[in-house]
Length: 82
Image (spheres, rainbow, N blue to C red):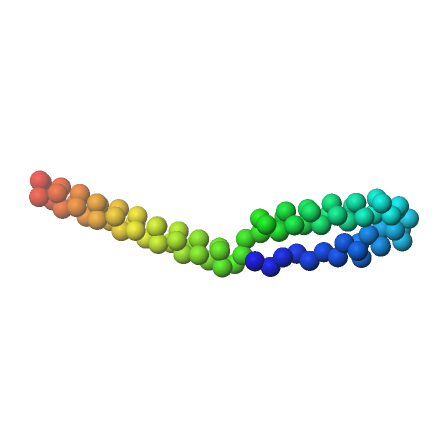
């Protein structure tokens, strides 16, 4: 999983240039870096999604096969009874 890169020094310097106090600019940069770090942990990769979809496809195939076996068995039983 790739991480989100965030340059806290550049962000803080940009805030300082805009007139924000040094302490506030640094605090905002650190807080935003923490947000990006937490958000980055919940990102899903393409490989993860592909694996999950493959698992889902396999489970659905098995369930459909089982349903067909039950349906054929039910039809065969009804044909023998009637």
